[in-house]
Length: 184
Image (cartoon, rainbow, N blue to C red; front, side, top):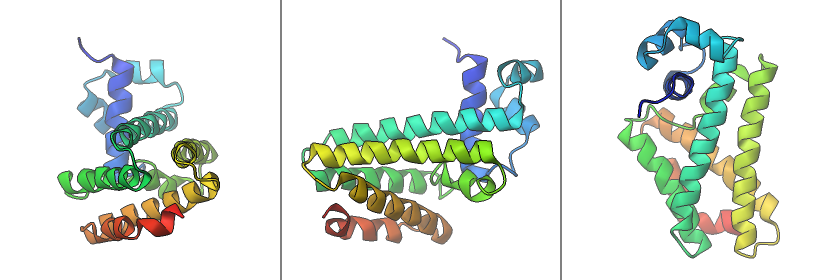
């Protein structure tokens, strides 16, 4: 079954935003790579690029959260769950030759200070990830789950940015080796 046009638009936009940012992603490129006619774009996203970017951010946030839950759910111990999540990001970076970092950070760094709607979408994505991490910590008996989720989310985001900028995953590997600092 062929992917519906709306989904092709959001999937294509999510990938382009993640790899090249908001300002470097044009509607013509999105249309060409998705194979969707221009009329469909404005049918599904009347606000154009901004509406499409918000939908792509929402889709990316759900996709990352689902992937992380799947890899973490395959492990019994909290350190193994978190290490698996870090390995997921390392794999994403390495297999994409460091073009795919965090799908939200790229847009947040570029647009959150100037576009309130995109800022809100970024904030919601991070809030969902924070809630998932806090739930993971709670499930493993950690009383200070929200604080631990903050600490780990900040470390992961910083590790992703540094790893992408350096074209190596030492920052993420360092987080993995120092997991006890993020889990206590």
